[in-house]
Image 1 (tube, rainbow, N blue to C red):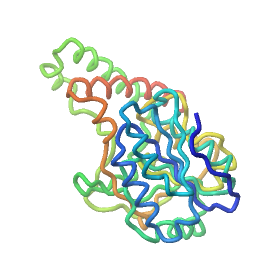
Image 2: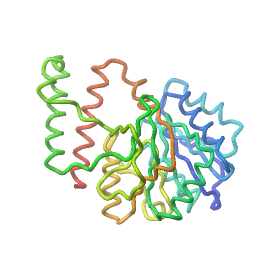
Image 3: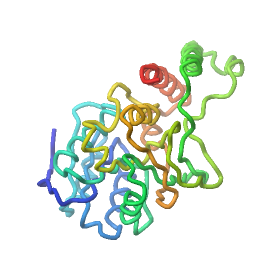
Image 4: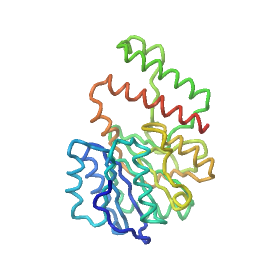
Length: 294
């Protein structure tokens, strides 16, 4: 269901897609940081609500009521990360053909005033299809981009088997007793004390907290993400999709955002057991989808 939509504009250069779920404070802070950017009058903002039921999207609506460049789309169910963002991406490329589409986690903040200019400069210099910025964690000040290498089939199958066993142990209530037998839990992102140098990515993925899709991508691809996953591994699948379609992925350390991390997930799952089982279930399902692309 579409609410508060504004007319499309072929001259719009930048279109932000923000997936909202429950955490209105984060979404409002994210929108506010976009509005404070230099040349923000050349941007549009699309907020996609993933069926929040806590009154949060109504509070977001109140905040954007005075903005003439913000649309809100309400999904009728929680579609997860990939499908939810695809709703906003599809609307963006339909209403603003030729624009950069910036898919942004709602728990991110942009402090670089010249953020948009840096994107344009990077595109002119590197002709990327997808670009990822330096993502700085507000939890530990670590640098999250780029992610590690896409695992091979053998490694991924082992991971799926491990997650399946750990999920069973958790459901049986004996996870804490046996978890040590399976080694350390997989890290979902790579945290570095220092930022990595800018580089073209051939076998590594970009972090999903901020992905910048240029016209080289948006004019070819109808979706930003594989719609078969609910959560996790989307970035690795995207890397394989870009590889198949000869679309250039680039990490630019000169472009920066800040990331709070897992705000919506933490609001949904309160106990450690619930969060753990949510993690394992979705890692299993998403890893099986990734196997199709390797």
